[in-house]
Image (cartoon, rainbow, N blue to C red; front, side, top):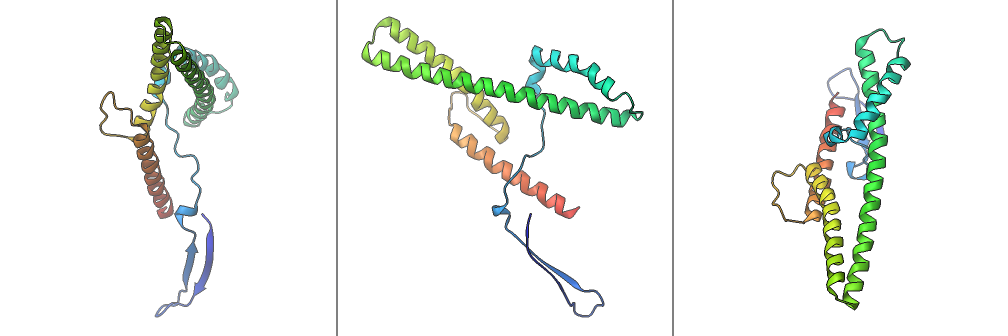
Length: 184
């Protein structure tokens, strides 16, 4: 937050002075990263579980001089968060690359099928479409979860609606977090 103007002004009927602050609008403020929330679907990922299990002894060794168990627990949670963020970014990057390759394959299959609509080409087109839809369904499910939608009908693919809902709810919660911060 940036301040436009700050003044100390005389107050009426008191020996204390009043402070007048002018701040920039919240609309002008860029939103930074919000609270981190653990993606519990990682607990089904064997590679992630092995990664955490293999790193845990290193963290215990790294923090061997810490005597307070609460501080040790916070430091380990911090390392878990760091490792999880790095792992999740790699997974997301690979997933986006697979989605892009699947999209390109689908376009190629559509072009081939338009030029030569043989049974073999139609089967390849259906397979490419199924693969793309399966990958894109994962993206939609993430949008639904982040938007905190109360309902969702199976088969509905209105991802723009959920994206807008997610964006609006994120702004709302960030504003509430901002107000709570200002009260403290």
